[in-house]
Length: 112
Image (cartoon, rainbow, N blue to C red; front, top):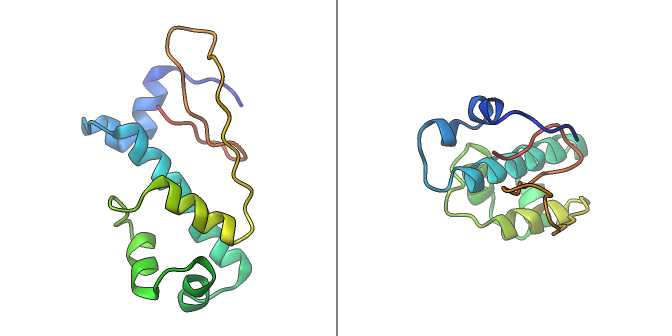
């Protein structure tokens, strides 16, 4: 995955632009929700069918997919993705520079 300039991070992360304290977490959660929506679509599931598979209610899933996911933990979103067949992998290591970063691999997006 290519490294980006911090200015590019600011352009991609609307929460960072708005000055949110937890901008990186919001960005990562949004990426997970985007992947969740894509997976549901690729499997041809209705929201009701997907909700049953992931252990949520349809209204809860609908709320998440409409962007209201601030109260949902990253861990729960990752469990939802795993329930739909995604492999979740977390790696921890030194960044080799003064500031580390968080990457959602398998895609093109990187947290600020």
